[in-house]
Length: 202
Image (cartoon, rainbow, N blue to C red):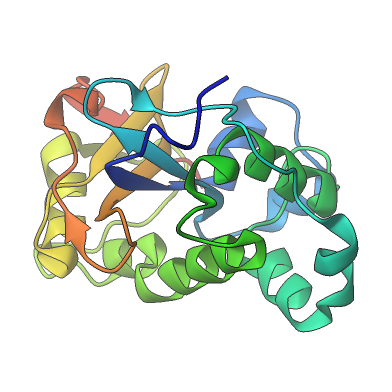
């Protein structure tokens, strides 16, 4: 367990591509029709330990979350459980594993509100589609260079993201923020997939 007294230094905002999740592992039937990147999590991190996990503190107040219908409606769109379609359980597990590590900065529901707003402001699918050099779109056997994927995002954010892949398939994109979640910062380039090009499945 990590003590919240050991502060994190920055935030990793992780968005996942549902089509890749469904291709590489089990996923819910509804996830197969999702056509944009969705939130995996907002992970407090520091430069020595990378992502912090399982910090001390209270678990997510599920009653408070269930009572906030408007937030639930937003999160079902931005942060669905693509594997089991059990959204509340997924949010609770992400908060327990990662969110508690920032509870001195973001009280419980604020953690989700901030994440949802990040998703609205930094929509990876829109960044790819609007890349001036050439639109980056998913499709059967579509492959792109890591450099183009990075450049499409940096064109908007002005900072280096991380691209994650599994078996040369694009799985996740990470945008890094300062500890308050207000400003984008450079991610560690060493954490980016080192394949020359990867598939972006449709």
